[in-house]
Length: 163
Image (cartoon, rainbow, N blue to C red; front, side, top):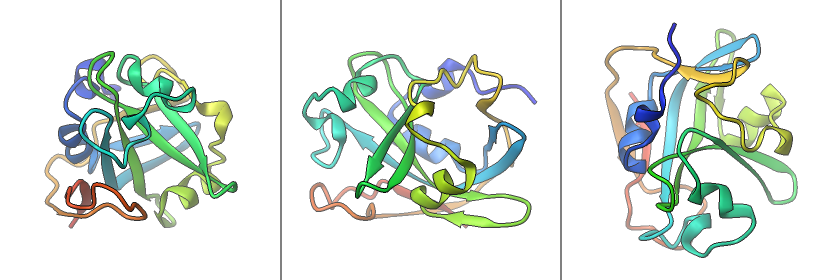
């Protein structure tokens, strides 16, 4: 299977979030199908880490196709993929992953199960051979809802779930 290339990620975060549904995530020897995503944009999204530039969110201002891993509640890592062009900060949070033996429904559960930590922040998902994304299911239907666990920009229906 061919890895997704940079042109896949270098699009509006909402478009990438929808298009990631059904794609295959490869992490080491583990492969799973993405079932849920959320889009975040810095310029027009108060819920985004990049709404205000910080050292933590600086990766979101860089080129697309890189992993952005952060810690929430002091105990759970979350996996995001940087999207859009440089200086247009945005990312897609991976919220659901179906593995052959289990469906992980939550970003913290995904990272804990796979062992994704801050050490995996900043990986080029286009060139890396141990952590990347490929084509998966050809046609995926989905629904969209408000994002989970945020208090700002709750009007944006930028959470996408495969049906």
